[in-house]
Length: 229
Image (cartoon, rainbow, N blue to C red):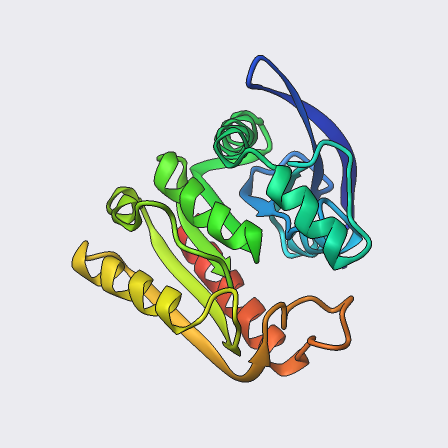
């Protein structure tokens, strides 16, 4: 098993600094880089574990802390934190986090990948539209960038994973994204996992975690990032 390094770091953004969790293989690299974007719960153990999983697969993964130290233990608190989040500021922080990661000597220069979940899924797509550094993006059950035509700026391929039963990112969201990506001639795959619910990838939530779907989605993300980065 690949030995990895994990640590919290600070990067400059919005005239101040933003914390983030870095996980990468031990050694000089260079390694392909990935930005991992949190769900509405914040930068919790699950997101850090996903970043660490990427590191064990040979990636330098960086998860910015968009709540700046806060996490939510239950849905009402998570919704409150998400509603209080300045999405424009968060998007700027994500762009700066991507620039920070791309500047590190242990990261390859071919481009950065981005992945996000729920709230982070929408932010991952937006990030891929906002910076030319992102060459592949994997949004999981996220909403679309606003306006949707922002996707014309995408530089690389998209793998978008959705749950069949999802009131957050339902058929209207999926169909709008497919139409926009097709209209702008982007390379993409949209996969809807039968019988799943929102957050099916989150293995800390036994009420919705679906192992087979999660394993399939993970393998597709790894394949996309290895090909693109």
